Amino acid sequence: MSTTTTRRAAVLGHPVAHSLSPVLHGAAYRALGLDGWQYGVHDVTEGALEGFLRDVDAGWAGLSLTMPLKQVVIPLLDHVDPLAEAVGAVNTVLFSAAGGSAAGRSGRGAVTTTGTNTDVHGIVAALREGLGARGVADAVILGGGATAASALAAVAELGCVSPRVFVRSLDRIGPLRAAVARMGVSPSFEVFDERATTSALAVADAVVSTTPKYAADQWAPLLTGLLTGAGEKPRGVLLDVVYDPRPTALQSAWAALGADTVGGERMLLHQAAEQVRLMTGRPAPLAAMDEALRRALA
Image (tube, rainbow, N blue to C red; front, top):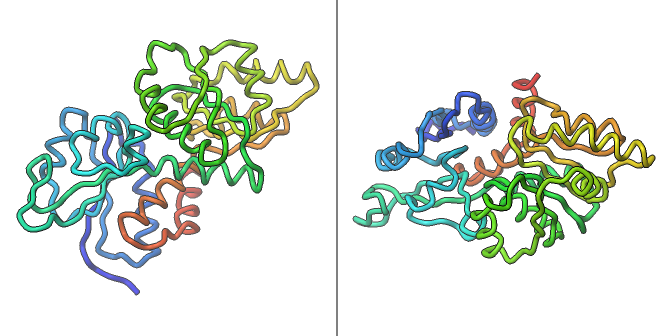
C-alpha cells in the first residue's frame, strides 16, 4: 500500500557526489510504496554541518553521514545511542518531533536529533555472508580510523574481543584507543610489518580492511608470495570495505589463493538497510535494494 506522506532524507559528506546511498534508499522507498519520500545528496563540510542541522524541520526523517562528518557531528546532537557513543562514530542521524517547546543543542524547537551507528551492523552482516555458521575466534583489522572502531565492535559481536589491529603509526590512533576503552575490548595494536602482517592475515578467521582505496594493495603480492611458498591459503574471510575499485587488489589476491572474500558493497547494502528500517519504521526491502545496487555497480 503506497503512501504520499512527504518526508525527506539525505546523505551528507565531503566529497559525496560518488555516494550510492541514493540508489539504495530510493529503491527501498519504491519497494515500500513510500511515494512521497525523497532522498537527496548534499556536499557538506565539517564547518557547514552545524548550520545544516539548525535548518532541519519536522519534514525530515534522517541523514546518512559519510566522511568527514561521522565524528564531528557528535557534539551537535541531542542524543547519541550507546553503540555510536562507544564506537565514537555516527553515520546515521534520526529526527523526531520535540516535545512541547523543547529545543535541542543547536536551538531547534521542532525536532530533536539522535545519532546512531549502522556501520557495525553492516560489517557484521557482510562478514556473516562469508562466514556462514562459522564463528570468529581470531580477527585482524587493517587501519586505525573511524571505520576500524566499527570493525572492532563488529568482530567483538561475532566472538573476537582481542583482534590484532595493524596501523601505519601508533601515534595517530588516539581516537581508536579511546573507543577501545569505551567498548571494553582488548585488541593489540601493531605497526604494519611485512612478515608479521601477512602471517596474521593468513591465520585469522576474519580480516577487515578499513584502509582507504589502494592503501592495502601492497599486501596483495606479499600475501600471495608468502602463502604460495608455504603451500597454504588464508583460513578466514576477508571483508575489504572499499568497493571502488571492485574487486580491490587485496580481494583479488585473497580469492586467487582459494579463500573467501566479501566486497565492501555488501557492508554498504546492509548498513543502508538498517538506516531504512530506522528512518521509516519498516523492515528494509533487502532484495530490492540489493538488485538496485547490483545494477548501479554493473
